[in-house]
Amino acid sequence: MSVPPNESSDDQPRDLNDLVDRVEDDGADQATPEADAPVADAATSEPAAPELPPAAPPPQKSEAEKKIESPIGDVQPLMDWYILKVAFNREDSIADALRKRVKMEGMEEFFGDIVVPTEDVATFTRDGKRRITKRKLLPGYVMAHMIINDDTWFLVRETAGISDFTGAAGKPMPMEPEDVERFINRTAEEDEEEPTIKTSIPFKVGDRVRVKEGNFENQEGDVDGVDEANGRVTVIINIFGRSVPMELDHWQVEPL
Image (cartoon, rainbow, N blue to C red; front, side, top):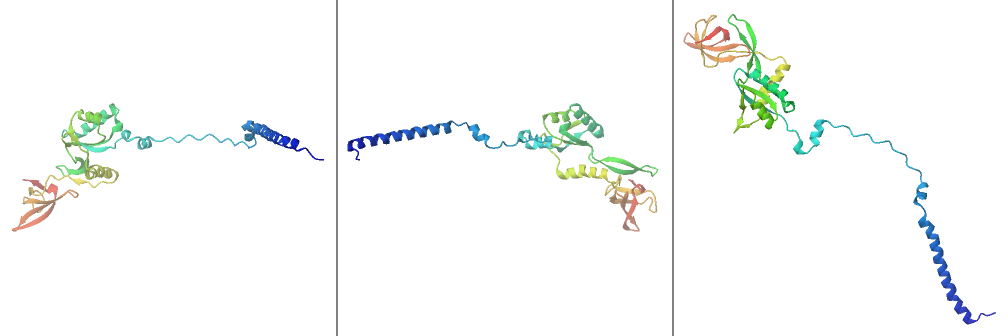
């Protein structure tokens, strides 16, 4: 049985259009649930991550570490050794007064040691007894380990007995490293170890002296050498027309 041509040609485009419309409608209907599906459903399908313990607080840093990490303007300057001009024979009392003022003003952070460099020497009394005394290495001076700023400068200058810092054009100048080693570090090392005690000898090379005891009593001569470690002097004495060096204890001679 044959289909009439007119009926077949009219229904085919209509059926195709209906099919396209149904496919688009079905696709839209199927996509909508997926798009509208809650995100929580996908998340619930995976196991939850375990909770981590709270992080430990960072370690506390020391003041020194804070200064190192702080900006350059906040870094505390280093201390240097400075020499202070003071009144003669008052070095110890003036050093004590400066220490007290530093403590009273609460400026300990700007000051270190304040010292009067000394060394142990042996002296002899008139009856020949040996006595150990302190001899100042730099009479008329006190050394201070400190930081220079306006406050510390005024505190030092206003301490009774201190006239000024050593330096040029009114500017305090720190000590050279070799001077620190000579006057400060050497004194500290001698305090820790048994120091070699020198003998205070009131003579120097070239002095004219007279022998007052021994085989050459009343002989005169010139001092040629001084041995403070052993307390002896070498004197050039004229014996039978010849200049002979004689080594004597320093108390065996007297000045002319």
